[in-house]
Length: 166
Image 1 (cartoon, rainbow, N blue to C red):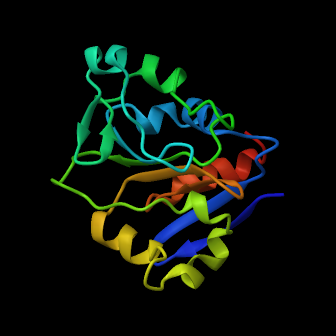
Image 2 (spheres, rainbow, N blue to C red; image 1 turned 90 degrees about the vertical axis):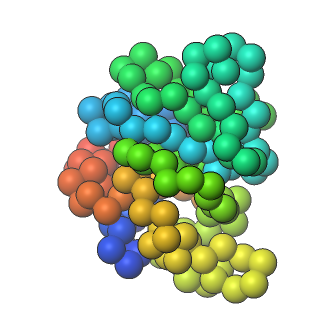
């Protein structure tokens, strides 16, 4: 069953992990992610290190974070996932423009619903609302307790909510 809500001015939707995953969401949202750049915030609960082949295709590291090239249709339809748990505990922030160094923490690793995100705003936790407000991503896609999508663009969340299962 899908769950949805709003975190500040960021609508969100959660989809069950048994009926969706990040690559399926990327294919469904391809028209919305093409032209954006992705920043990996969590890769199987750790940090992604681009492979040599990915680096040859424009992937890079900015500080501790892996950054994609500008997303095209081919990349959107073949999105990388960590292999240890089939992409679970991966999280991506998507931006039209990157605004310099970022300190982003993954929400997916906390195994919580976004409905309870405020419970994690403590020292050593993750203040997701503050992080979203500070960096203003166009889209966030992650896989933890559920597959989730967060975006200030309500139409993106509404599209997935209307689809039911992706």
